[in-house]
Image 1 (spheres, rainbow, N blue to C red):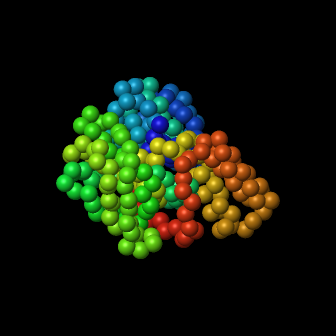
Image 2: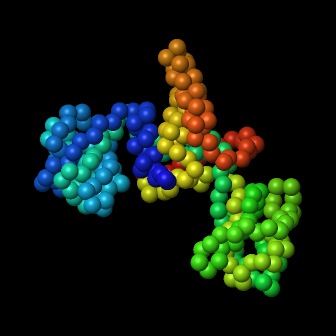
Image 3: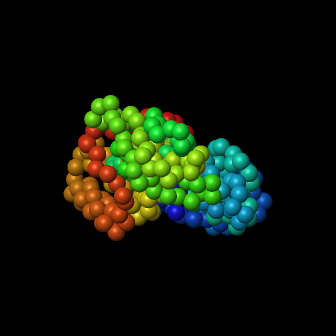
Length: 270
């Protein structure tokens, strides 16, 4: 199962902040959401987690501008009226942009993950191919070819040449048992791409326990490094690291060790 940034935000709030679910009542609008139960806390975000038909505004959120026990008004209108019995989640405690930044920190910290490139097409007249730009700075781990039915077969004999130690240049294929016009599937290890939009997909090898623990570890490590330390914060820091190690042990990811380097997050605003 793959998770989106929207899913990751809900996971992060559930682990780090405060959340509670409410059921949407009838007679809502795109900016005023009637609810069947709730309290009068007015800070935070309203996430539409699930609609009865699975359509919009499922997967959307907005800032709560005012709230009573029977309705919430949001600052930015949803793209559609939340249907009755939609499940909404109120999230408090952290700014969205902050959590998105540390979702990206967490994903980079996990390590290099297997990535697929299918931009090359095999020709029986061509035995040497330029390595795709996305793959040049990575190590080709496996090579497959796909026939017209989508069946996948390993390429048994190939070689990758390099211009330097760390830069791949050419892909030479000596395996003659490949259909002409077949798609070549290169599997290489790469850094997780940055994810900012709610619908951006997180790598499918990352399970919910690992995602939850990695985000929690990233945020608490930030607080540990930025705030005056006390016994509570030290305990949280140690617990977050322990939880992360346990999650990885129970949900192993086929990662590749990478050299330590400073991680740079290209910040975007919501």
